[in-house]
Amino acid sequence: MNKHDETTETLPRIVLGSRSPRRRELLGSFVGDDQLLILPPSSPDEPGFSDVHDQPRIEQRLNEITLLKHDDICRQLRGRSDLTTPPFVVVADTIVVAQNDGGARCVLGQPGPEQWADDVRHWFRNWLSGRAHEVWTGVRISRDTARTDFIVRSKVTFCNVSEEMLEWYVTTAESTGKAGGYAIQGHAASFVTGLDGGLTNVIGLPMMEVLQGLKQLGWQSSRS
Image (cartoon, rainbow, N blue to C red; front, side, top):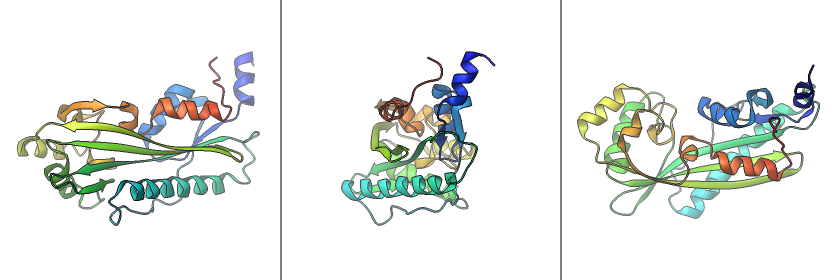
């Protein structure tokens, strides 16, 4: 065993509490897959946003969701004997906050599993096409009793999406499992005319802020 392997084994692991392959790819590319442990929440159920429409309550609900995810992961970690040192825990939740011409706000999560195509058509026609919207990612990072919480926002502007282009996008089936019903790193990049803020935040994990949060709690890269 070389010195790098010994160091890697003694460093605390980073537990990513997520089902998202995109978050796994992003975090793994920065911290190294050897230090990453994926542990999805035990239940996919979480509070919705249909009853909240102003910024303070949307923020509060997003923080509630990340807290629920975090507590779920911590419960799963209790009693595990394969983690010799307390791990860092990272959880996140991403939403799209859109606004129509009348000024009304709507939070777009993931489209429904059965009617996802109808959801996506409705969202594009009423909330996304030809407009700017915000993508919010709530993050909680902890180790032992220390923790940090934050919400990162990015602004995305879409072109006017024709019905023909919308139907083409629906046929890609890219919308399933994506906040707002689109993937900016995929075919939906065709619709983007402006981005103000971090791209990785729109994908699902604001990496610069996550790395800062990890370092704030004492994380050190095994690559240094």
